[in-house]
Amino acid sequence: MSEFLPYARQDVDDDDVRSVVEVLRSGWLTQGPAVEAFEEALAHSVGARFAVATCNGTAALHAAYHAAGLGPGQVCLTTPITFAATANAALYLGAGVDFADVDSDTALLDPEATARALGPATRVLAPVHMAGQPADVVALRALADPLGAVVVEDAAHALGAEYFDTAANEWVPVGACRHSHMTVFSFHPVKQVAMGEGGAVTTNDPELRERLLRFRDHGLVRDPRHFEEPDPGPWHREMQSLGMNYRASDLHCALGRSQLRRLPDFVERRRAIAARYDTAFAGHPHVQPLAQRATARSSHHLYVVQLDVDAGVDRRRVVEALHARSIGAHVHYLPVHLHSWYRKERGFAPGAFPAAERYYARALTLPLFPAMSDADVERVIDALLSVLENR
Ligand SMILES: *Cc1c(COP(=O)(O)O)cnc(C)c1O
Image 1 (tube, protein in one colour):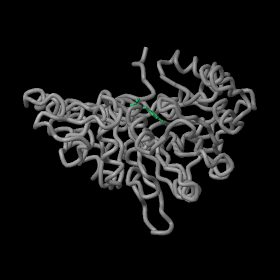
Image 2: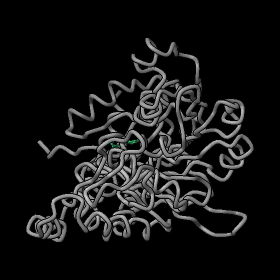
Image 3: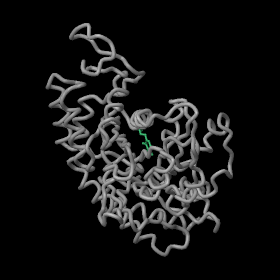
Image 4: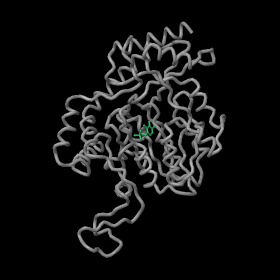
């Protein structure tokens, strides 16, 4: 029996281990220098002015939506094809959630559908760079601006990805926030860079950064120049707003910073594997890789194909047959509006977002992570092709 191949897995090397051990011996387990060092490295890596590290990506979304001023009576508009956290984080703030449909070939927010769904209550527009491919943030920002909506990119999949800015005639890294106010990352071990648990928000706006920092740390203000009440002494910290404890520890940040150094190699390897899959499935009648936009360069968090279910391919049987061959095929994602809670509590029903539902019915995720060997990749290809042949 071959070794089980998960759909994603971290790659931790000796340097990563050394970085964490150094912090363990340093005297700072949290709120120490490794946090800022990681934030600086991340901001530099994506070309943003600031990065604020958090304890996970969901906390980063919550903090970003809070910083955007999202609250009751307002709406966060996002895509149904995402991890539920993108939508849930808006509900933590008492805001509403709505969805715009996707392009079923890319699983990315469709700007036309988005234009129809945007309204005066939309405070946040949150595109998701599904599978690592940047959504059309240039178009989406142009739609959000007239309404004063804040654009928060959910780039949990897309560290290391780029998109083309036609006006400036150059490629822009995701996270630079050139067409958004904030970008959110996750460093869960399945993502491009692993922290165990970790997340971050990048921004170019010093005011948003300040709001993110306060929210991360109980809403506390430490700088006496910003106190609202008289300063009783050097011990004083003033809680001016309600925040959370969403801090990232020095241990996690040390791992994140060490992993960031390897990001270019990780992305290169991910792209090579995706290219091999593309070649293997090109022209196959029943398997179609997710379409790639000409103005996007994916960092390939996930390798998603669409199965031809109309021709009778039974996805459940394909996934079970791959599992039987120790291949961790998966499906990303059940459209958020079809989760049981969203149906019960928010009244969403099947048919609300047909392109997203069509995408989901056909979606299959194959293993893709940098530590996969070429032989692993061939094993996945052979298995899928043979499963489809013998269906
Ligand atoms: C992973 C993920 C998140 C949440 O990140 P966590 O670090 O797991 O909290 C949010 N959005 C998307 C699209 C994700 O894939």
